[in-house]
Image (tube, rainbow, N blue to C red; front, side, top):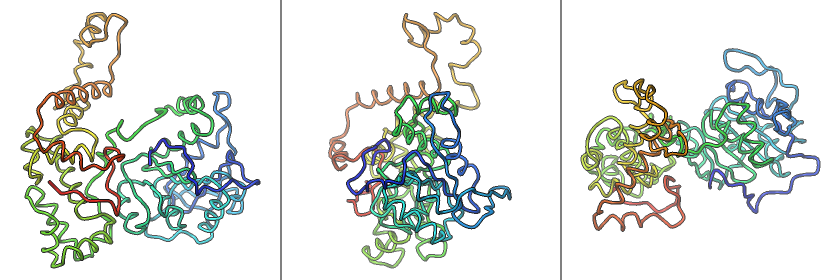
Length: 429
């Protein structure tokens, strides 16, 4: 589901008469982090009509008995209880104190009732575990902080977890990834309710970008080798550790199943139940992530990187890398190095001698043309390097198997999307 989608699914219910979409209830729990909790309070609770931002009515509700203890031992006293949620057309769950604890049943009942009456349910970061426990994410796409995504997928297999998105709008249920992504989702809500001009005005007041996407930030780089916490006590932990230590070797899922003394079918089932991911897709992802690290930290050629990550050919690396991260290995390396100064040396555009050059000469050197001086940011330079590298790739002849490999991607699936449970797997290479 695209993170910019505002289409309400057919299953969305009509908003009850007593509820108003502009009335926002924020559900707080004891032990919740104060920063995540403050995001919806700041966005929806401050009157900024002088800046062109429409006003919301905020109801801060305690999800359990007060006082609520938060970060640093601070104690909060919410002015409303769960009963106030019955008036809200938008209900926000900023975060949950621990992914290992069950949310209060009364709060789950209030969320279910609000959803049944057509309220828009929004959750930020680990609040996904509250919505999942209430059954509101069943069969839906959702995102959460990348560190908790494997645990969410394992514990609630009916939820289509996509940790690559900053936020996911599924109509009447919206979810965001980490802390800063909560701001992105709140801006998206304002944009959906009142248009781009209001959202941009709010972004200016908050001094944040009005619209970000995962690809803008290289968000995929925040993915790592994380697995559910419970795997440490499972017999498969040794097999997983062996796989991570031998990614430079060519082996397949059958090899892992043999090391676990299981049949392939049993291994697939056990691995999926433990991690929420198919073993083949997990293995491909780990190889791609290893390739990322080598592209960022070494001068190995793309062919050498492919061999050191267990891919059978550079063609296989390019295909999987592009599907996982939305760019070719060469383009990724060029963009990464353009954004990141080498050996502590400032980026070329910021060197003192360039700053001293006349504006006209500097504009010509940067290709700004005669219409004025264009100020290049690090992001612009990265985008230029990406486009240049992509163009270079397009001009190179590709092996015969390249097109057929890329054709394995099902029609309509966006680049960079992980394979969800139940989707067809692809060979490692």
